[in-house]
View: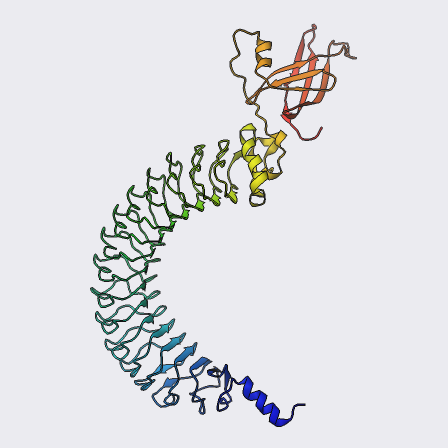
Length: 547
């Protein structure tokens, strides 16, 4: 057991070296942090350490907060109220607190604020009034916080804003109004915010974007307009935003885009158009965005791509076109993308790809082709993609015959784990086989014979064009095939009588081998009355992996 003086000394160290102990409902950490939590806290506890710089009230029963309880503590820099449902702020609740730089009130039922709620906070840099129930803001609310640089108002019930509410905030760098039912923005609302760099207007019910809304925001670098109801954009919607780097337009109702809507965004790095209703992209849409590295256009209605749409994107690293209706890709669609590492074309309507479609993508690492209508891919389609780590190919109707042999070999060598769920759709005897596990000898073509060389007899012609000749060990049966089809079956029958007295009868099957693989052939012959033999069962060659 520790001596009492030593125990008190250790306790003081654990409390972070405070000059005075914490009041019982609170805990103190790292010398300057005070954490107060619990429903038994109905007011600001007395005896809070005067040298605290950070003070947290989490899930308490705090109600009205007046000007008196927080008057002590000139060193307080950060004050946070999280999930205090009864909290309300009276005029001057924070008094004259020159040291406070960050104030957060989140997760309360606060529905209104007095225009004098913040008192005088000249050093306040960050203000969070989030996920509460604020319905309106008083016009003079920010008159005494001129140094504010970050204002978070997301997740409230703000349906409208006073036109000049942000006029005092000349130093503001970030404004978040997301998740409020605003539907429209007052004219010139953002005009005083010449230094703003991040503006978030996600999910506020916008149906239209008045021309010139953002024109004064010359320093803007990130603009979020996602999850609204925008059906169109004016051609000059983003003019003047030459420093913009990130533009979020996903999950709106955009059915078309003006050809030059992004023309004045030379520093744009990321453009998100996912989840709209775009059926086409203008050919010159991206000519004014030479520094774009990420283009996300999944979950639209795109049926094709205009030739050369990516020709100016020499810096592009990621293009996502998943979940569209692409049935055809123009020749050279990805010709000018030397930096591209990720290309997602999955869940479209592609039925075929040109053999050189990916040849210029020398930096490609990830390619998505799953969920299309591809039956085969041209030989050598990935020969120039030396850095390709994986290609997703599942959920396509792959025809597992000789045409798929190059792809199956490539999968086994380079992408087997990723494509363990990639299966044959046909022929019937291979349906359900996983491509990485499919033996190469199974990939043969059985098709109708083509025209023979007229200079040869029919038998000679078929044998001459049949580099794969399958035989049994005794030489009884011979099957001549080329890469595309099997053309000639020869069977030498040994003498064999029919015990019924009806004449010739023969039935057998064989496993035939060649350098091209293995097949099984079954033959059944019966003699008709009168001595005429007929083939009762069709010759039915099919690949097999085991005798």
